[in-house]
Image (cartoon, rainbow, N blue to C red; front, side, top):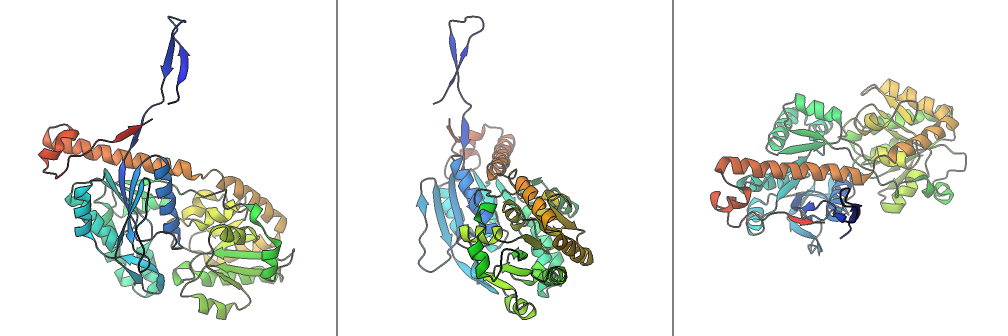
Length: 434
């Protein structure tokens, strides 16, 4: 155990050990409908959360759908997986939707009681986990991860907007804390009746995503030479991503720079339609890891027309890769981009302005490169370690508040509540490590 030696002012001959403060370790159950190797922003950020909390000494139980037949749960040190049944999501067969598992979770959490349940997604599995936690009087935190209410407009079910919002409000208002990535989303949800909404930004891996991955060979494989203006967009190829506007914006760029090339990284149900509309574009498909990082860094600009993001992880990834980003003024872009300095912003929903900004970006490649360098500097301030620390603190606060509430209700010390509330196991205290 490390200690700092300090001289006693009254008695210089004495030396006092100043020991570091003990850190408290929690038993955490993290529930999610998606997790790597599935490729999407939610899976990536949940994996980062799990990794970061493990590194901080917490014991994690990861509850998620089984992704393939015969998959075995992982047990590695302070991580233990619980695999439940799942079904393929319509139009996205590579992704699974977790089925309700309330009974199984109640049985498991009765035998080994977590200190807190964190629910990352609001699907059937997440709802059943919430019900199990409430039954067992466990504190719960949650993430608002996906704009289901916004997506409904893009799939011909806009009439479901109000029922979906009512469900999400009911879901999150039963948790001690709902974490959102931006202050704008916090204000929106609070205006819709959501309670206990806290802002926790998202991080970006600036060691993975960086300009060093730029590859002339990769660019050549796309048919791009040293002077070709490569415009990239990374993400799901789906209606809610507003990719028709991407092609319109790219066409405006190409009128000014005929050597321009459009690169789309990702896959989805809109791919065939996009290929028919822009056959000269490069469709790179799904990319992960260093390969994805190289695709970002080998482009010259990033254009992101989506208006349905809760955050948009691709924006800081592109910035970390040294690319100037054009996006609408909301979500991650609003939080990270200073218009005209490290990227370009268009007013939310103003498609004409978006196309004008695209043309402006294409006219001055030198200025675009300067913005890309400043974008990289901005991304370097968004470290995951700080983000995980904020999440951890919200979890500790929720657990502490729940314990105090139980103690007030029963007029006893939290450690003695096992008999007071009829639990089959005592509430174990945190394990403290230095």
